[in-house]
Image (cartoon, rainbow, N blue to C red; front, side, top):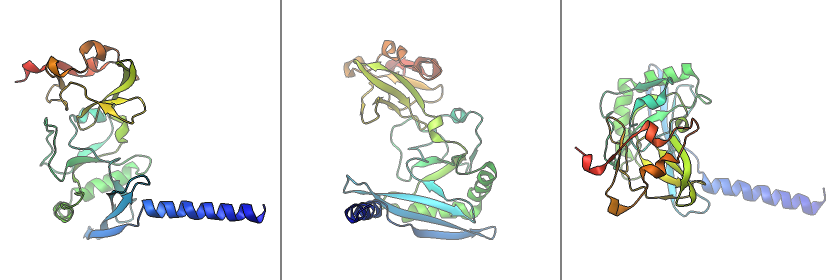
Length: 259
């Protein structure tokens, strides 16, 4: 390897290192405490996208010597799940008896309520059970309020109402099909949001349906015809990996049947 090549590689490595330093700053602690003689810490960091001038905040939590729990867009939802039966046989636990009911409206208040997903590849079942005990402690109930209050003026720390030992992507209902001569994914998020995203997941269009699943009975309403949007015949062409259409798993009704 000649000197020019070595200098090029060193320069490239320096640039890559600088890129990651720009995009991901270090973690800072903003709340600590002790539960059953073990220390816990809640941390945050500012993350900037390479192509964006705006920053976002990520959180993480650690109890004792257990692995850190990332608390971000990949491990939380925009609200409580529409039905816990989406978890199948995967373990889940409510950590509180309050604020756990699903909302049929399309907007959540600041300090969004969510389940926190502990991915099995990162957290084993024994560690999951230890975290369940931690989150059910009276100390965490106080810490939860403190964390939300301290972050209310920025990106609020989420109000965690339950834990799931599973990967959140497993519970999202995806149906692939063609609409207006293009490939789309008809998606129902874990928090009940109804979306129609392009096949590369780079954008989405309006569905003409109620923005969230309506509970009970997993109802999705067709909005008035004047608004346009997807139809029942269109939905028949969308299938999940089991060959089911959205019509097989959700109840679709015209909006004039809203109670």
